[in-house]
Length: 329
Ligand code: UDP
Image 1 (cartoon, rainbow, N blue to C red):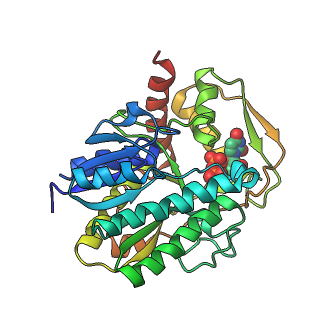
Image 2 (image 1 turned 135 degrees about the vertical axis):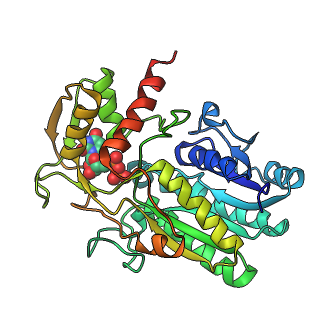
């Protein structure tokens, strides 16, 4: 029902904030719960905001007491692969243990709808491209494993406690709100597109291309960049699918098309009109040659349609936001 309260945990982050906007647009009432460790208060523009950590169960309970929450969407996870290898405890505590606290508080308050932010990192190295949801799941780092563990937990909770959930396995989220109200803002930034835009804006001297000897046409890695607003619309469809009685399930969310690192840099130069200095560098450990998702299942079952799937549009919206972000005081 419209006007329902939706709790968006991690709603002050990149993807969560776009989902908050989309949920308000659809007539829901977003409640943002975020500890602002990686999130930004400036990205909270829709709904109520509660500062809190998932490990703070009393604070979490107070939100469920205050608002008649109908569903929870969970974006609050650490997502730096390298850090997860160096400090797995941090990842398993936050991404796994804290999610169990959240699910338990939901049970206490009788809330049964849950949308989980999962990742293509749950697949590990691809055995076949494009990757379907049936692909074997063999994550190769603690980050990917932490997300897969939550998927298993959700599956068990759905059997034992009648939880209704959808796990959405994202490929590379990219771009920004076409109205430039919110966008990507990570500190530290490690993602290709914002780093390339930092070069375009003069904040960085160059971009390093991590590996030019991959088994791809131009030798650089191919990834599936999916516009964040398209991701957000898929979350709303997943929620409504559950509200209408859809069964708990897992869906890939990607563009369906792949772009190489060199293509991204070339398109960014074209979109921004700036010269982008690129330096060929060593491979980054753990990067597969190609990652492209098969998203037919989301299209068929959720009736998801992408609006912003071409790379120029993705980079143009990111650039509009990036200029605003970097030029604001
Ligand atoms: N990449 C790169 N230089 C950078 C950052 C990333 O060449 O400074 C490459 C990276 O090796 C990968 C692609 O860009 O092939 C996308 O990386 P990103 O970190 O944005 O996302 P990931 O695929 O790791 O989630």
